[in-house]
Length: 216
Ligand code: SAM
Image (cartoon, helix red, strand yellow):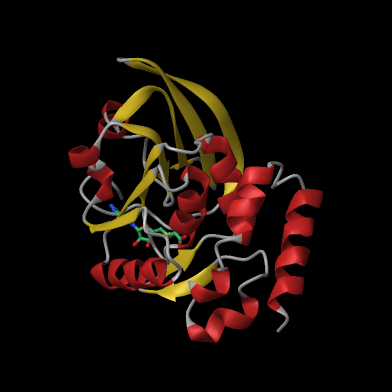
C-alpha cells in the first residue's frame, strides 16, 4: 500500500464528485491518517470511500460523508465543537485540525471500549485539543457548553432540544435524521436563543442509529 498515493487519489475522487470543496477540510483530512484509526484488518481499505467496521456493530463513516459534514458545520480556528458518537476518533481528528490549537473538540461515545481506543489513537497522533467522554450524547454535553458547532455522527430521531440549548447563537448542528426510507442529512443554524432555521436537508444517507435515552 502506498499511503500517499492512496490519500491523493481519495482526495481527487471526493473533489471530482463535489464532496470536498474547501482547502481547510482537505488539509484536515490529509493530516488525519485514517489508516491509524481503523482496525488492523481494515488498514488496506482505509483510503477507499467506504464506511468500515470498527467493532461493537459500529462503523467509521465514509470519507466523503465526513468531508461534507465537516464543511457543512462551518467551524473555524479557535472554535469549540461537540461531536456525538466518537466511534474510531477519525472525525474528531479531522475536526481537531479545523479548529486548531486554540480550539477544542469535545466528543462523546456511548461504548466505553470505543472511547478508550479512540482516546489512545488521538493521543498517539498528537490531537491534544480533543477530549473524549463516555456517556449518552443524546443529552449533549452540558458541562462544556456553549459550542460553536455540534455534529452527530449517528442517525437521530430528531435534532434534540438539549443540543440546541447547548449551541451558541449563529452556530450550526449537522445531524442525520431518520426519514421515510433512508436518512436525511440535516443542517440547522441557531438564529436566536429560541429558534433554529433549517439550512439544508439532503436525502439518501445511511447511518448507524443513535442509542441512549433520547435515541432509538
Ligand atoms: N465519528 C465516528 C468516526 O469517525 O469513526 C463515526 C461513528 S459511528 C458512525 C457512530 C457512533 O455513535 C458509534 O460509535 C456509536 O457507538 C455512537 N453512539 C450511538 N449512540 C450514542 C449516544 N447516545 N451517545 C454517544 N455515542 C453514541
